[in-house]
Amino acid sequence: MIKFNNKTFENISDLIYIEDIVVSPISLEPTVRARPVQFGSEFVRMSGGTRNITISFALLDIDINERQALIQDIRDWAFTTTEKTMQLPMYEDRHLECICTQFPDDTYRKWWENKLKLVFTCFNNPYWTSDELIEVRTGTTFSIGGSAPPLMTIERSGSTKLMHQTFASKTESMTFSEIPAGSLVINLNRQTAAIGSTSIMKYYANDSTWIVPKVGANQVISGVGTVKYRERWV
Image 1 (tube, one colour):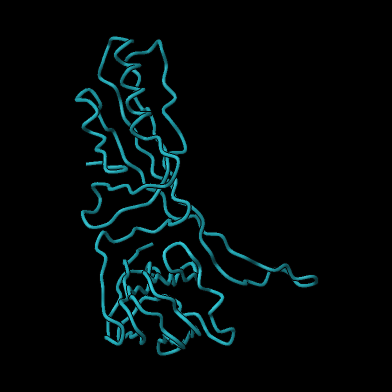
Image 2: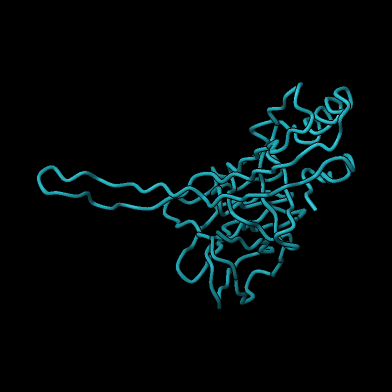
């Protein structure tokens, strides 16, 4: 089953035959520094780019008007203005976050045409991401699986403000001189902190070290609130 933006592709019509689903690997983007004299280059770091999901299908309909109506339904199913969740039959417990970047290039003449394609691209989050959101209280030891850094936040809802609050892992520590009342969300991946839609980064201590989400066992984050995360895979 292919589900995008909570809508199932197969439900569009019984006359759509899915031929293949191809999920590309994440494109690798090495950063290197050229040597001015010697052969070769100095490797600096490896980062990743986007990944594509290509859905190939055929329309089992002779009537040209009905075919074009189906193509329109498919375009409507795939079109969004922001990245949405896609669930594929490869995994029952993981999803990708993507947006349609290519509609089918169909013909008006050859009704028997197959290999029509929809292409989706993962930009912001190219990893396979767990459907399960795991929650642990701060100060509790926990383990994170997967093969890529998890999506992780620290959240708190309180009616009173807090003064001089520190959140710390075994290697990093970040301090806020004040945390106003309200719904706090500290996004460890984006390195932002906000009460609702209002940033509180002005209270962040400059000598702090931001907590970096990572895979592994025996992790603990101290402070006041709840750690929430989704595991991810390359």
